[in-house]
Image (cartoon, rainbow, N blue to C red):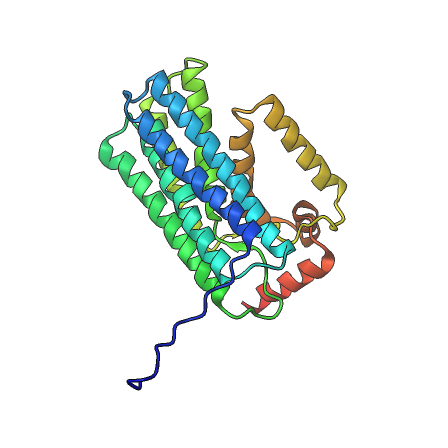
Length: 286
């Protein structure tokens, strides 16, 4: 560079306001969830006071899930999705769906187990969530292939967090409001299940993204009934419905989807035939 030539800096990225405000809401929900968990840690493990704070943290993580669901959809509707939003979203997801659930996992559910086991599961979850987000960004930055599928490779981090947090919400409810005691062997089972959820994030299992669903999409009777049933379940059974719904999504990609016919997948995932054919061709080329 010449002595008299001024330095050249990279251009500032374009930052769309609305979708990134939603991503900021996701990040702040995760931050306040972590602060709430720290407040719960001031009380003895297993006490009602600690569990009340942990339950508040689960609400904040669920709110972060809603913000995360909306930000990408709003960005696509506004044609404002880009590298800045993708990176900002990943940073927010690490906080809301990585650190916060990992802390809850160690403190609210596995507190009766040896520290090495409980903390080991929490660390495994955090590492898999972070690696999953980094892998997703790398794959998203690659040039699009012809007929490339929009579905997820590996369990998406928000859904993994939802599975973990909804399970903890159920555990907190039955132990504080229904006076049930979860025996230590079952805590080991839950710890092992959370380890499986963690590893699914880094797996090659295909999960539907539902990114193709929009307000112009023609729904099916089956899909409408499923959504109506989910809403009723949330209203009537708020402590158990989230765990069941997230578990169904987890098991759908892992055990059920590979054996379904293309027609059944179109019905459940609300896809058009053209979209399904394109993704089928993409699968054949891999």
